[in-house]
Length: 244
Image (cartoon, rainbow, N blue to C red):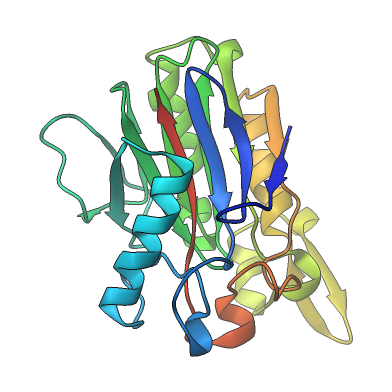
């Protein structure tokens, strides 16, 4: 069950048991100012570097103390890598997985989707960044195929993080070439894309049965979330998961 933690550093928790931590951040509780106010954890944003590092220290110390934090240089691809002892932060990819304990996988978001995965025994965890490009190019299918090589599909659980909702996501007509018509609606001659429904449907088509969805709109929730579509230059949230 998704729980909002108001004390200390405000954030949402999917899991906080003796085997795994998982959740996502809000924009609350940090030191950044202006368009990055206040808990901007985006390493590739143009916020002051010392502010980003302080925010990350505060956030990860609160939600996952003693974990080694891992991040990707996300490039809107369908590429996935494994995190082993030789993994280097800022590796270019949009998904990663690990079987190592004490490793926190983090996905940077500000309107794009994110999906976290674990198996029933918490022997493997994964995180992916799925904007429209990665979703179009098959990153979800790639991840599920990789994970199913390690554990049976019926043992996998997926958590869909906050992202821009259909009513806030106007797109061009070229999107009709990328996705089925069922994920679109029109209003006043404008076309709107339902990324959340597309991500959810794709997971189900891959055979995923256990899917939890935050169903939170980054664009509409200005007090809680950054949104690139709403604000232009802005901070970044993160989704995170790790095995204890």
